[in-house]
Length: 85
Image (tube, rainbow, N blue to C red; front, side, top):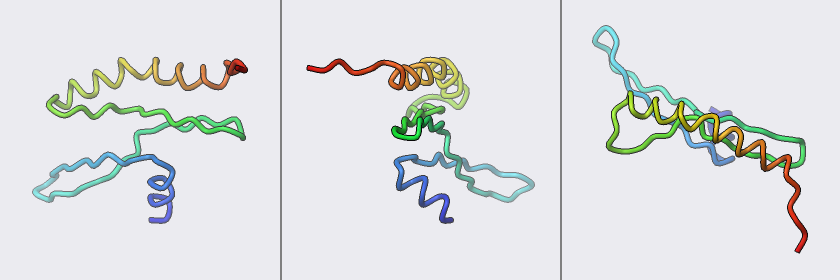
């Protein structure tokens, strides 16, 4: 439980998954995030895009399509030095 609280306190929101198996309903929580760090900075990358009004298949498809961009964008932030103004 401490791990869950730590993740949530760091801005990583869980995704709730409800399913039924053998007549029993249960809820599980996953944290669909990647965290990239260079020791000084931390960049959070959302791995699953949960858009209202879409089917499960559409959400997975959208997430897969955005995955490369989201990871590349986060890595780019570490490699590009900010210009001084």
